[in-house]
Image 1 (tube, rainbow, N blue to C red):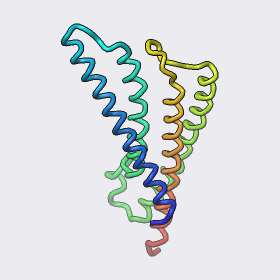
Image 2 (tube, helix red, strand yellow):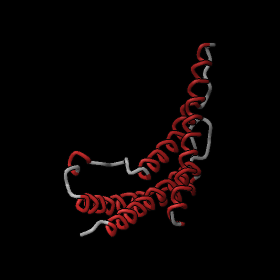
Image 3 (cartoon, rainbow, N blue to C red):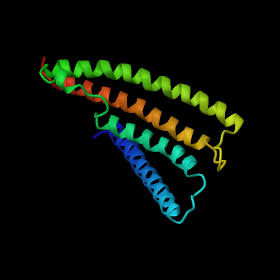
Image 4 (cartoon, one colour):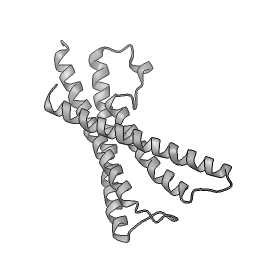
Length: 163
């Protein structure tokens, strides 16, 4: 395992744990709100919190799926093709995927900078949304880097396959 492999695995593992903690927080907030409703009260701002934290869960779930190469697969279509053709098709899809994620990352960075200038925050609790947007940008950049990483791994595998 080379340095790039270790860095990508480390970054993905941190993101996975961050996503797990975020999902746990969402579950605790919802459970707490349900328990409070039994006593005729509600926890103010639960929708604000769940709405913003769920973005982090989704971001790092996509990162984990990309690392495991489980995000987009069409096994039924490619199962009977030769290994070399399968890898070439996957690389073609990875090029398109990289363009997609890099574009979304760039646009999100622009929106985050714009929203940071205005001081965007949640309606009820007035929590700044900028840190959540920044983490989303990080996750998008990580996804784009993982696509390149998977492209590189496929390239190495192609070299090992005899022509």
